[in-house]
Length: 250
Image (cartoon, helix red, strand yellow):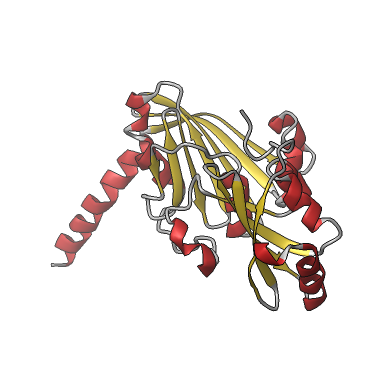
């Protein structure tokens, strides 16, 4: 019986080992600190606003297909979702792997705990069929450490492509002038943001540090735009002026 169990254990290990052997790592690079600037080619400020600390980039061949895998370490799952949310748009498939993910014709992006992941595959459909298997070699896609989404926004699920999360003014300035104006001089810790393109309006749940900030922001917002407020948040709706089309570019 002892020999049988050892033999069975070996059989279970061998397939996983062989699968791992199918991945050929052609190049692997790690970037931290100032090294992130050079790799991101001008986009580092946006990542740094979310507190990125490390990037591991790999060029690999898996089952005959080429992939580029980038894994960014962020402080929290919310920060990982934030930078992810700025890079996903139309998803062919969203939030189906157990975590937060978006599949497009040539890229799979995901949030796995405090990591933002991008897998690019230039060959298209042939590589796309294997990309789910590839990403699971590097990260657990079980959703156990998904971001803590506000209950007020639970109606959005799936979240990918609909919800954005901002840590600071760089991200906010790219989507809404009116919200940026509201938050000027306000101490906030994060903003959950939903755009409604059909009505050219938005909803924003602003996370605040203290009651003083709640009162200060509340005083800036028209009463008709206040949806809900608590001790450390304000949930509001807004609309851009005709000349302020940052949120809805042509």
